Length: 452
Image 1 (cartoon, rainbow, N blue to C red):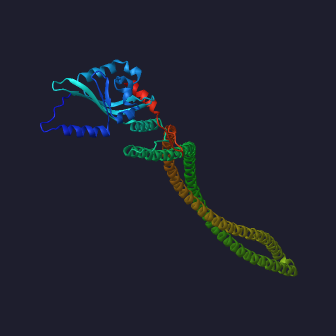
Image 2 (spheres, one colour):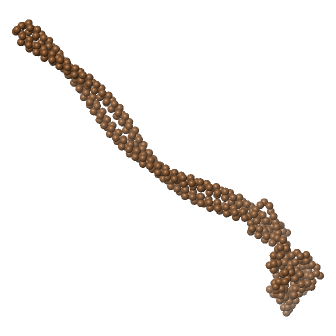
Image 3 (cartoon, rainbow, N blue to C red):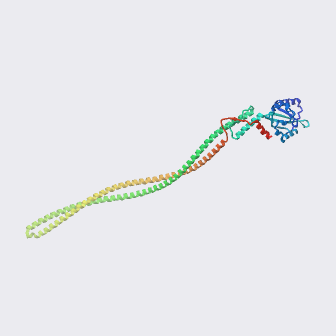
């Protein structure tokens, strides 16, 4: 940038003097010939660089820079531009008499005559070595932060703005360190929990698969059992029908036995009547025999006159005797028949009693079979409901198995993410101690001078 100094019309020499005095008291000021030869320097400049006026007046500006930089085209071009009236302002590293590097915020301002020719060059500078060093310290801290070191702290500064910046940085890093420490602990717990969850999910998945297989087998077994119970229920119904038929048959047999008992009783009664009749016939035969005997006695008494009658009486007695013998035989047969009939009646009565017992047993069996059939039917219904429930449970188990697989995959992903988070957090250096470091001024100057 180029400028010409044209004072306003109302500007006075006194104003220039006042301004010059103010700058002289507050700034480091040095004046050069257009070629860079030193004309004069104020106390602030001499104090900053560590020289006396006699040591620098008449010397070239290059005495304040590194020899390597003084030999560069860039340095040569700087003075050529200044000699042509260029304006220059920047931060510059300068070498003190003792070899230390100081940093100045400087402005090179060419002073022009009325024709625009450069008479001399004035540099007004401020020592910013401390500020720059502390800013570089903060920059170093930021680099440490970039590299993950959360234990680095900035030094306290007597420059208010730098102190405020350093304090804010330290507080922020301390909060970040605490947060990362907490995050590291949480990440470790999450990683551990995720590993446990992954393991548990794997075991649960295996158990769920086994349960699903077991439920499938159980469902098949219950279905087969349901079919068996239904078949048993149908068989029980058939048995119930058969028992009812048998009961009806036995009841009919009981009726036949009752009729038989009645018939046997009637036969017994008839046998008794026949016995009575035979007894009458036997009595008649006995009386006839007596009469024939008497007739024979009377015929014998009658002699020849009664001989024919005696023959008849003898025949009658023989008939009576045969009738008596036949009646005796019939009576014996009837007596024996009565005994058989009585025995038959007894046996038939016992058969009736047994049939009644059988009927009661059959009725009991029929009732039990009915209950069995009803129970089997109810069991079939219950088993069908159980089978339906098992089917639903199997569906739920299959769904749970799928969800467990998803959970396992999610827990695996969570474990991987937690490990990744742990690795990322491990990049940060954290600890209870605090440290402050500052880049050496010489090194900082060398870097910047190299950039010059």
